[in-house]
Length: 95
Image 1 (cartoon, one colour):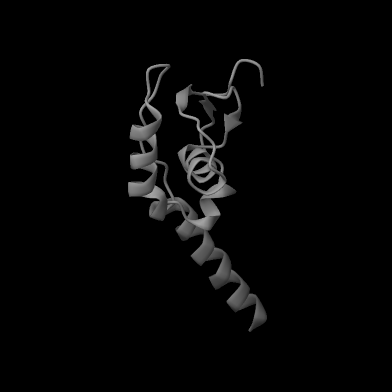
Image 2 (tube, rainbow, N blue to C red):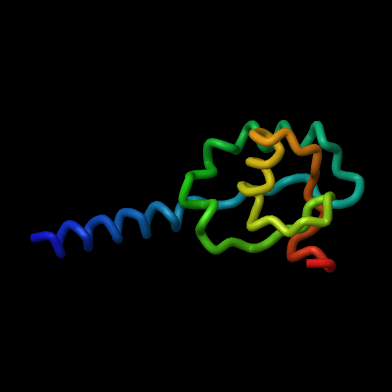
């Protein structure tokens, strides 16, 4: 019976991770912080806890740090107060 519940739990988390998706943010050197903050606030509820650990496409922030996706970048902006925007999809060149 324990194996059954473990299997169910794995399936639930797998389905949950599939639907935890990133969302588009303003991109490029001209992306304004205020626009980015608004998009993050509108979409942060789509960022489930599991999305911080789920494999995602890396993005480069204006601080030249590679983030694991839009959710990770928005978390840093909203909850840690960083003043950063998304430069481009993919890892930063210096990473």
